[in-house]
Image (cartoon, rainbow, N blue to C red):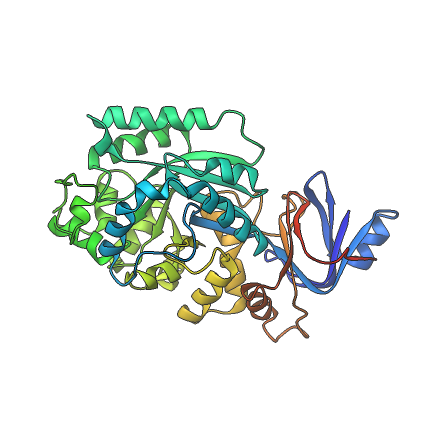
Length: 415
């Protein structure tokens, strides 16, 4: 099949007006002008989207599928929000699967093709696996439920290995060390050691809030030190969360650190750069929870891999990663070209999957979004116009591995 549009933005190469993708067996075989792709592949069916733009699908580097819109705890205070969230966990169990299914569908319908979910013990894996998205579930664990760090890590490893059985293609399960205030240093170090030995990824929430910084430095955190009713007595390290994470061997290129929104100093940025950590930027969640602004331009300037994340619907207004990214471009004064890259290829690089997805290039999966935008001549920042359209419910179709898993264009147009 040839998929074509008035404009193709491959991200890893220049824009192509009247461009096309040749897709075969779920992968991209060729990218170029429609006239040339048709000439070289006579008889292949063409699906043409006039007055549309094809971009790579969005890569969501940090999300929580298991929350629903409409009854989020009040924002403004991270510790207050967390305490309210924990108090609702018993009733939340009854609606988490439905919420996860809805969140995944919303992500797909807004142009996301690859999504990473973080959920307790990987509870949202079934909904991600059935959604049509490609992605990873990072299974969080909480050592206070166990007697020793070894028992805690053994248990989550066993859970992760079991969850990997019988999964559909392009769905994975990894481990998450939830946060500095919920996972003790010994459990963090042990989990990281085992994951690194296997050459896998690990995720964590890091330097997310003023309360977390206070906990790590002083041992208090306005409730975070007692979030599950069991006091976390390992705080008061006298260092930043980034320095703490370095001390327990959490920082290496396989680590995806979410948020990095509060108190991230120049020294911290240097540590992140030297250790090769990737960052997940969730600016709308950070704003809602009073967590500050992540120093993304500075991190990018030091070569840190930064991708975008939506977080979940209890801290962010939508699962639309393009909308999240548009917010970030305005927050940091970035160009549309940089924004589109952050939403796609940069996210893939953060996860170490840039050889598979994140841009439109031969040899990669045919993961793309079709967006209702027809930018004018180049030089007018067409990427910003496309980003704005995608952020404003302008995604007309989403393909994962060459399959249109979302398509609201009436039959399309043959070319």
